[in-house]
Image (cartoon, rainbow, N blue to C red; front, top):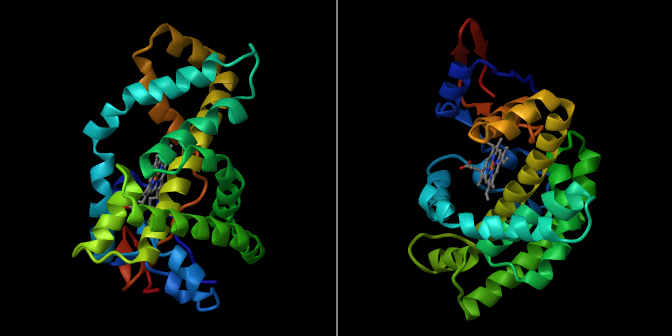
Length: 265
Ligand code: HEM
């Protein structure tokens, strides 16, 4: 097990995130992972420029502030619909936190409505593998990852035959043009977006609600002053972090931060 450093000061973190001496390309270091599975883990979270830049530019267009702002009405509609369903008492996770991001990210990607229920169990297992520190946890999640990958490959084939106005079609078009995107890269990207856009937001809604229940005076303040909501969400992200793991970086050479030198590797 290599030594691990945790960098916590804001300025240090910002500089490390931009420093090309830190690499995220480490998945190739695990030769025991079968090549087909390793391909699924090669995505924006595990590659460096120039591949990162190439893949990032393909999806970036779908997430500009203007386009996301354009989704406000649709998002409000999804939230209102879910909250208007029967009963004064709901299970926040099942009835609200899970469906909001799942419906939205599936809309963006172009996952058919009838298939969406199948994702829950798969994505949960795959996300748990990402967060798991144990090899056992990782191995247990492989069948779910394989099923998810097979399903997405099927969608890619469908979109190739009949294009739609969605992100999977946009990626298929990029594959066919000079952007040189491979089918493995498309499948891995779709899995990343599903997981990144899904689990994170579920946890943010859940930990946010819990935090406000544990701090009723903050909740009252926020209810009385609606302008505080935006900064409240930022503060909840910081305070009750919905992502409890980091994607590690590996030093490509010795790097000195403050008084500490982190050796290469
Ligand atoms: C509360 C919500 C979210 C949190 C807390 C969160 C957190 C994170 C974190 C910690 C990283 C890793 C950064 C790194 O180590 O380099 C990341 C990367 C990423 N997230 Fe999120 N995320 C959230 C929502 C989303 C959503 C809604 C999407 C897309 C639909 C998304 C897509 C991505 C992608 C594509 C990356 C990789 C970016 C890159 O390397 O270029 N995330 N996110």
